[in-house]
Length: 90
Image (cartoon, rainbow, N blue to C red; front, top):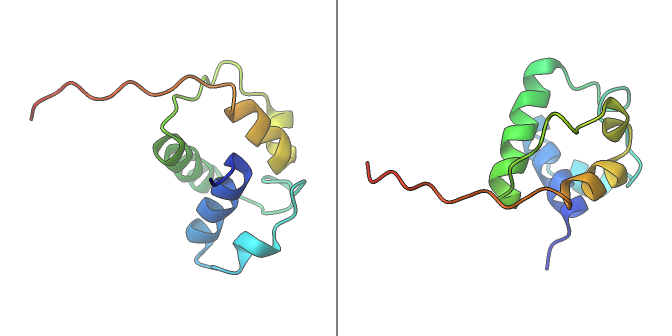
């Protein structure tokens, strides 16, 4: 089973177009200062996180400090509720 932390690293590697990044990132890597994600990249990252982990992120509870450590963000995301499946038949 893939951990939340591993999924986050895989998403970041894909976002940056650098497959090796998934193995190079430390568990305490800082998404803002260390990886220098801009606002668009952060939005893409969060949308992909919701999709891959099948969760709904409560952005009201997401604190900036959670983005300063991959491990802390993973712990926060593990508390998020599962995303409800779409009921649209389109």
